[in-house]
Structure formats: structure tokens, C-alpha cells
Length: 152
Image (tube, rainbow, N blue to C red; front, side, top):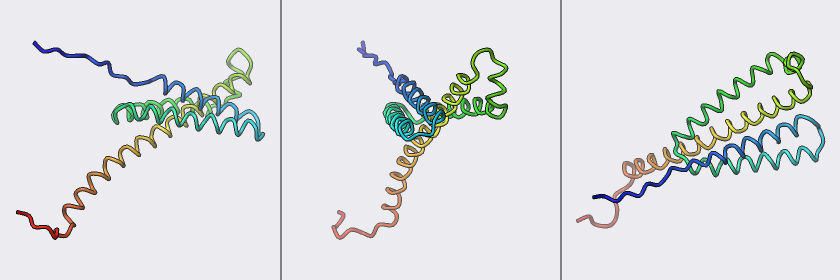
């Protein structure tokens, strides 16, 4: 009889949600005013969003990271189509204050764009890291000169 201890796989999706929220608030702050204070605050929030997404990228597999990047890019393209139609036009058609809808869609656009870009960058870093290590080993074994030590 085998004793197997099952360990649940952790994905820390909360980190992705926090990152999306941080990027969304940063996008809303930077879109609403052109002052130095909110811009610095938005930059700080964006840096915190990249940090939380980096923590997530370290905790998942490449496949999960690639799937997340694909979903985020699809979401961004879906929200970006609202900008093609025009946020003021959509705001006029939807009941409620237009300014709130414009800021909400802008925040969602920035959140999805920055999260998709960051996820893709972290996936690229991971792919580059795995590719470089295998190529370096192959190049060393093929192009290395014989050792001064005897091989018996």
C-alpha cells in the first residue's frame, strides 16, 4: 500500500487580480488628470502591479503563463473595440453618467493592456532563460578546446 500525500496546486490567482486592480487604478489616475502627483501615484501603482505579476509568474508553469497571456490579449482586444466605437457614444447609449463609464472602460483597457504586456514579457524572459541555458551547453561541448587534463 502506498501512502501518497496530495498537495494542492497553487496558482495564486489573487496576485493576478491584485495586479489587474493596481493597473486599472493607475490607468484611471493617469487618464483623468495631467498633474505630477497623480502621475507619480499611477507610476507607483503600476510598479506594484508589475511586482505582483512577477510573483505570480514565478509560481506557475510556462504553459499557464502563456494561457494567461493569450486570455489577457483577447480581453484587451475585446475592450479596445469599445474605443473604436467611441466611449462617448457608448456612454450616451448606456444609462448612467457618461464620465463614470469612460473612466471605467479606460481603467479596464489600461489594466488589460499592462497585464498582458507584463505577462508576455515574463513569458519571454522565461523562454529566453530556458533557451539560452541549453544553447550555451551545446555550444560549449561542440566548440570547446580539449582539456589539458588527461581523460582516462
